[in-house]
Amino acid sequence: MVSDNKITSFEDLECWKIGAELRKEIKRLTDSFTIEEKFRLSDQMIRCSRSVTNNIAEGYGRFHYLENAKFCRNSRGSLMELLDHLLIANESGYISNETLELFRIKIKKGNALINGYIKYLIKAKKV
Image (cartoon, rainbow, N blue to C red; front, side, top):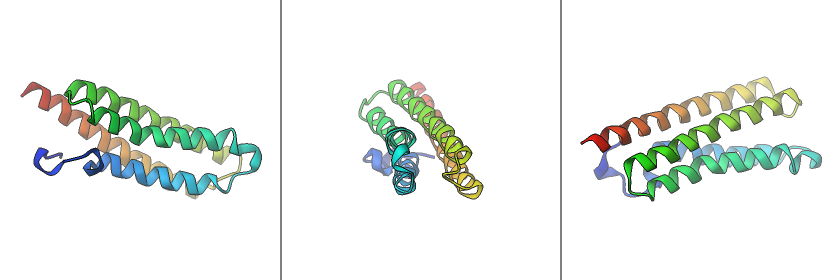
């Protein structure tokens, strides 16, 4: 649960923290992809992993609960896009089934944290 008195920046949000972790891991992962994929799959994976945290940060800066929730839903969409790119990387032989599953677990956790934050924002709007 999010507590207002402990959150002073979007960087304090657990959903942002796991997104930042994913962003770093995706960058390291894509560094191993072929040159051909650097401008296709790698670029898309890096962009959507950045979008996860970018949207959380932008929503936080809006200072309006429902508008913030909208950006969090965009962030959640970027997580799902990232999962789809990871599935493609697996199908293409760039990552193993084990690596895919590790990312799937982190994405699922990130999705749950974003959903919790969205619920908090919607509830806080009603108060």
